[in-house]
Length: 298
Image (cartoon, rainbow, N blue to C red; front, top):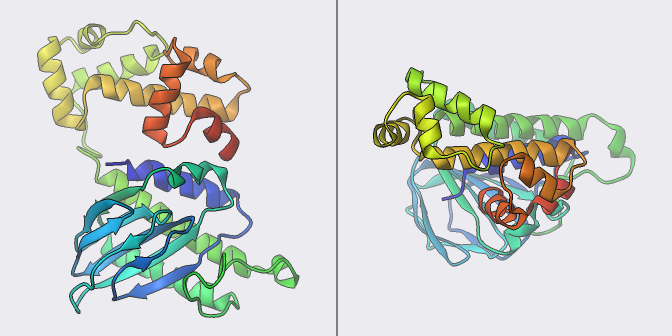
């Protein structure tokens, strides 16, 4: 399943640099999904009940009670009518103006997580809905316009109203990101000293393309087998996957903050083959290094 943290970070970065967010709809929903294809991302928080037979494009997924899903609408979203008691908050974001989200047109996206702070999240959804309505826009009807809450380019452009909407949306997404990170395996718990030393070692030597699992295990003063089991137990991933993600995280920084060519960035983070780097980058981030550089802020 895709990493919800990465997509929340991408949305926060996009909204933070935008003049005003494009929100076709935000509000409570009780019925079925019936969204024709559109260049939108939908965030759903199921307060009560569940959606057990939702299709995001051709993907068959489920959203249980007290879970948030983040999914694309590019291939359409459909479900049978849920139980009458089902209630959920729905938020649609029109991402058509940003090239960073163009890869969503190639394959359906679906991420989900359990909610840690239910009352806080409900309050933030309510605040966003109220601020959108207070911004002077008509009550939205999904797909009646490209961005029902985006302010016109006339006199409203210089008022504070769109910025209140933007602030409420940023706070909502930041709360979701905090919950997502808190849900990661062993979040907030101190790691055994050997694992902490191994992670520090990988953070210092990720640029070495010849770095091996044996090298990292020696830094933890553990056998390879015991180190691998302990690492998976505390992080939910293998040591080499952690190393790969460390390299990709550093490459994101270099792509945004430097003028290095993609192949130079690849070598800097331990990928001697730029084609392999691009393949891994696309798999982790959902777009190519070039698309990421062009679509993300510096």
